[in-house]
Image (tube, rainbow, N blue to C red; front, side):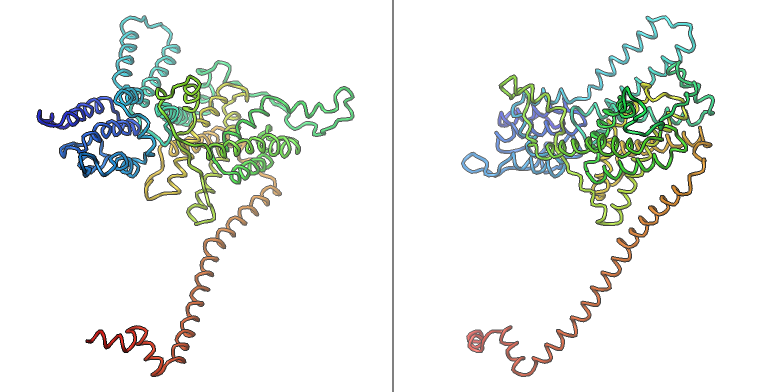
Length: 541
């Protein structure tokens, strides 16, 4: 904190120091808090037209010249626009849009914004301590070992979540609130620790452990016939010839549509979504000898899934992406909106992105991006397969709430992970390491697959039909051949052709110069360089 200003200083400067102290007391380590602190600093400093040289920054992210600048004055008014200067510095060092610095102009709005964006570390610590003191001193501990074990595990997770929500590092998303995404980051850590615990148990103990979560679990799943009669129109059933079609119209149809709508918002690319959708249907064809619920009718694969549910979800997702990319992102403070309708609209838009980044994957631009896109598609398909295999090896029915909670979990963490992967792939010089949420999602996907491998290796080792192996071998071979041609053979050929072209151009130019050479050409060349003879005489004189 800077020293107290001298009594003879301008009152606006003293107010700036006072505001700086109040701002730092209200600021946390979040970016948006630093933004509002910047806004308050220059809102009073611009009135004085100068900034004291001994101002120090409270954040290592801010440049020192931000607090040492002196706008030049003419007739008592600054010629340099102080707001634009601070906005440009903030944009360059903190990646802050300049319009965000114009959101709150006065000190009251500054303090209220900072208080809403604080992590409230002391408040959470006080409430957590009071809860632990109540459980320790005032509540009688029941004599039930299983109940105490469950409650102790839940309390440990809650304490960890409280710590993470207040202290964890922020990710790329800030809406509706940075604490929301910090919460899901901590849930990712807790879920990964749970998977590691399950991985280190025996098959019997791991399945029986699920009874502690739900007593109905830990029981083998009944056999079900998923394929059955594949006739769309069954003439043998006079009551309802389309009964096979109506049987497929269950709760999984809107789930498929909603799932692919959200996946489109996460991936933000039509081609990648369609490739993943079609590839998963091929995986279901290839693995129906391992899992019975992969055995579906042909029209269920390609009409119900790919065209109707997945295709419609992708189409609606692309329309939403188009609206988000065209939407103007100019935010205004809630208390600066005069009408109630505008306030309600502003609250609703709080759940939309603060700004929009269009994903341009460009897989064929270079080898690094091509391998990154292949890795994303592979991890996406592996996470989809884990949904079905985990239910099978841990004996969880498809309609169990744990299956739904896992899908909700991936919906919330998938968007952050994909944004971090895209930033790491698109700008590796600025993003020098993979994001924390992307790292956790990748680790969770691999751990889930390892649990499947350990708990039921017999199912995974069932021999794949020879025709299926031929198709997959041919597909992998085509990808390898295209990769070699696009990024190695084609580049070498283009370089060789360019070298030959340059070598052929050099002799032609040399012969042309020799053919036009001679005294006249040399004189004309010198005259072009030195000018005419009259000009030379004038220069010498």
